[in-house]
Image 1 (spheres, rainbow, N blue to C red):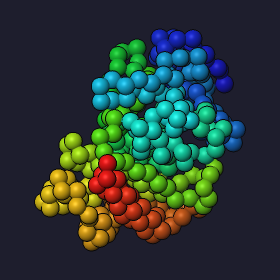
Image 2 (image 1 turned 30 degrees about the vertical axis):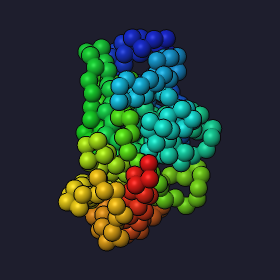
Image 3 (image 1 turned 45 degrees about the vertical axis):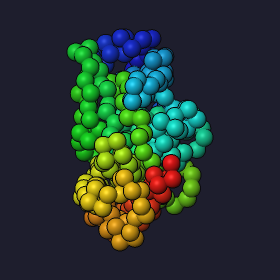
Image 4 (image 1 turned 60 degrees about the horizontal axis):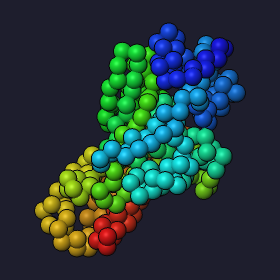
Length: 288
């Protein structure tokens, strides 16, 4: 295994172009586990730790440009207001030590359906900025996940930033696990209300081959809020509306039975989380 250590972003892109099979590593919280257990043996490791711009973030208008290596701890401490859903998801990641090293870029690169950041990114409507020596492009988060631990990156591309819209309404995230810390999600759910566009977005993790949205639930809720004038009145939601939203969210799952939980349990848990999060976010929207 050869270790490549570029000193700049340009050197990193050149190295990836020369060695498309090189595996990027920054925090290493997933990569090193696979290597240590001999589940993966890449020919090249591409160390990105000297690339300072990957650890920076900034707000541009109504979008936060989040460097691929910004750790979860920094998101929790500095981005809770503009990115509340992602900050909540960051809180659930493993342990403080892992949160100090792990990043959203690493989560996206691994593309595990159980990655904690994915539901929040889907709900927020993020975009992934990928770059190579050929140029840069933006990949909508809805198109990024292509299969189990597979993503839309070309072999010579690296993730530079994640562009996440600044929240214009309440957001929530929760996950189910066997304990509160150091646990892979049995299933997870994220929800974001977007009053500016009068839209709703969701994200489901660990309940399908890829992270997915509960589109039928979104469409149902958008129609109900519009028809009943609830965006303007901010009136209380009917319990039946929240119940139906949860049922549709559960139906959007395509889970499997595994050592962490059964498919039936995952569907049930997603439905419960969806219903509860809708009530939480709506109550927050009613009392800004």
